[in-house]
Amino acid sequence: MTRTIDYGNLMHRAMRGLIQEVLNDVRANGLPGQHHFFITFDTMHPDVEIADWLSDRYPDEMTVVMQHWFDGLEVTDEGFSVTLNFGENPEPLYIPYDSIKTFVDPSVEFGLRFETQEDEDEEDEPEDSSDPASIEAVPEPTEQKDAEIVSLDSFRK
Image (cartoon, rainbow, N blue to C red; front, side, top):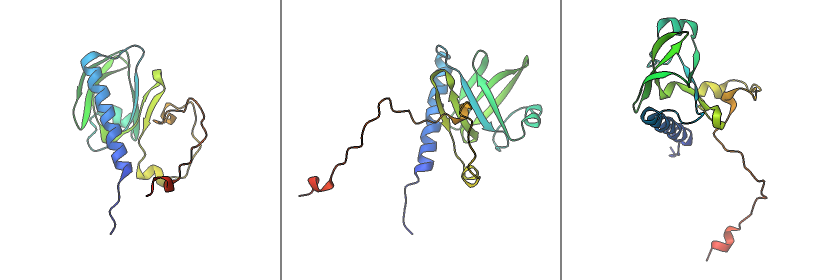
């Protein structure tokens, strides 16, 4: 059997580390400027902790917004807990990083989308470009450049 590099899992781990770092900064310093987050997660993940009425209302996935009011943000290596307001009802949530499907900061048009094996097995469906989850982590090039072809022969002795 040939050993391979699992780039998919390495990227997911790096992206989850980025979310952890951002949330740690927000915990320590608050949300700067107009920054806010849309976080979509799998409510059926075994380590998600949400109120029963929320899991009944959102049996598959849920998107929460961290913007004007949130409390008790705690960040660990596995996930984060936060209390959010749902119609004047503060509710504590625990969201493991492994349950996150998308993490979007629309104030700067930044987003991460976590693909799963199930997503890859589904047929390709057209995405609504206004959906924040369709924002990808790859920055758009500011200037189109022609590809430069480099011959490897020039490096050989």
